[in-house]
Image 1 (tube, rainbow, N blue to C red):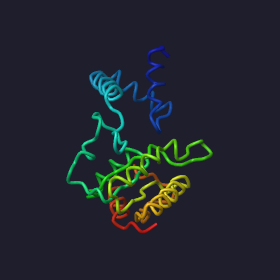
Image 2: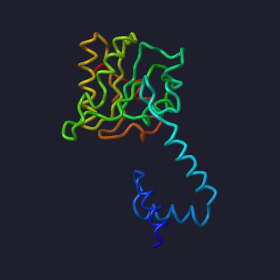
Image 3: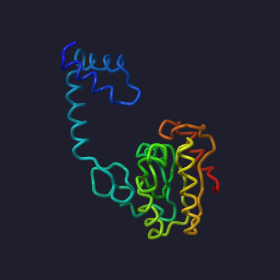
Amino acid sequence: MDTELDDLVQALRCLPGVGGKSARRMALHLLERDREGARRLARAVDAAVENIGHCSVCRTLTSAETCERCLDPDRDDQVLCVVESPGDVMAIEAATDFNGRFHVLLGRLSPLDGIGPEELGLDRLEERLRQQGTEELILATNTSVEGEVTAHYLAEMAGRLGIRATRIAQGIPSGGELEYTDAGTLAHALSGRRDY
C-alpha cells in the first residue's frame, strides 16, 4: 500500500469503533469519490484542534474562554448536572429541556487506572458548589462501575455541603454510555431522577 494512503488509513483508525477495514473504506471513499469532502474534513479537523478547548467554568468543549451555556443568565444556578464528557452534555441538551448548569468531569474515578479526585479536578467542582448557590446536584455519570463510584463520591461531597444529590438511573442500561442513549430514554431518566 502507498505510504500516504497507509498513513490516512492509520489516522482514521484513531476514531472510536473504526477498525482497519472501516478505515480503509473511508479513505478510499474520500480519495475516489469525495476529494472536496476530504479537504473540507481536513480543514474542519484542523480548525477544531487549533481553536476548541475547555470552558473555564464547566469544562465542556468550546471555542471561547467561557461557553454559551455558562454565560446564559436564564439558566438555573441552583441545579448543577455533573457528567463525564462533553458528549453527555450534548446528549442531555438534545433530548431534554434541562435548563440548569453543567459540570464536565472529563472522566470518572478509576483507582486502577490512577484516576482519582485530583485528576478529575473535584476540588474545582467543590469550590463551584460552594460559590454558585447550588441546591441540587444531579449525578449523571454513566452506570458503569467507575461511574457509580464517581456518583457515590460526589453524593458524599454534596452531603457534606448540605446539597441535595439526585441520581439519574431509570431507563439507562447498566454499563451504558449516556452519549449513545436514545433521546426518549435519556429524557425519561433525567425527569425521573431520584435522591441518591
